Image (cartoon, rainbow, N blue to C red):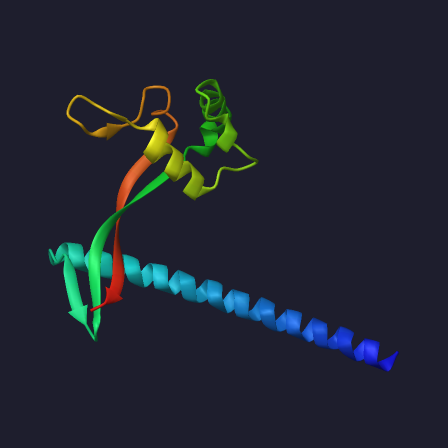
Amino acid sequence: MMEVTQKALELKEVDELIKGMEKELKDYKALRDETNRELANLMVDEEMQSLNCAGTTFYLTQQRQVNYDKDQEAAFFEALRSHDYGGIIRETISNQTLKATVTKEIMQDDAAGNRVLPDWAAPYLNIFEQPKVNMRKA
């Protein structure tokens, strides 16, 4: 019985360590995201496309972000269903799934060749480009 109790306590301790590490990882990821935003903004302000530093190339890219107005969720979901995109709807739509579906399937080319939203989707979606810095070994 003593061995079982010890293993149970060991499992509890390991679980608590994991929870602490997950919180710490979440904090580091938030710090990384904020630092990336700050660096991207500085590079945009300085009109720099790339930077070599300490054996790493940092380069500026644009990353498309897509989200929808939560106040319009029911109407938006109905619009998706009526245009045969209801399959991506779950209790929530993951940002990656929404971004991929909007970018690859829902957006259309206008007369000038720009990717635009069709009229049925435009009231529900916000699309913006966000600068992001990527890295690779120089």
